Amino acid sequence: MPAENETQKVEAVLREHAMSYPGAHEDFPWGHRAMKVNDKTFLFMTVDGEKLNLSAKLPDSKDAALTLPFTEPTEYGLGKSGWVTAHFDEASQVPVPVIKAWIDESYRAIAPKKLVDQLPARGTAVPGPASKPAKKAATGKRPSVRQAVAPAKKAAKKVVSKVKAVAKKAAARVKTVAKKASKKVAKTASAAKAKTARKAPAPARGKRAASSAPKRARRS
Image (cartoon, rainbow, N blue to C red; front, side, top):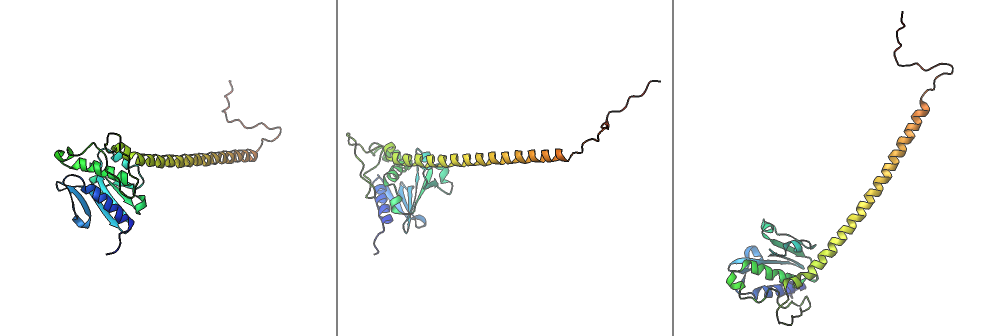
């Protein structure tokens, strides 16, 4: 068998994490890996060479997730129900702790309440080899979703700041161009006015300019 590439190794880590939840099992509809609970899918994953695509239902963190550069609403109308799809070109781009937090959120959104009640405080399990192990709190509880999603929010803020900076520069450039164009138009209009004034014929000496007003009738 050919050796696994790094992306396949990351997929295996995410699969193992998804399978650790109560009642989780996998299926392969349309040739894609689907992680299910109670026959309802809570995670889709596909690997194509070095590329990894995955989809999860994020009713709570959907808006934050969609600010990231590698995400988009899931197709086939699932995006309206809170599903988010992420695309990665290589294993090094996959933020494993964040994806594990998404898997946790998606499972809790899909699984029956009796299975969700079996889970510890909301959070993620130990991250895989593509990330550093998360530190446990003093109580022994796993980190919260807020802590796990923090790196993603930080990355999103950087992207938003960069977009704002580019937009600000573009607006300043447009303003400068518009100002220059306005000055040029005013200068052209002024030159045209002066040229027209020079061409206007002056009245002959000793002659009064004809008046356009009608003459009054003399009284008899």
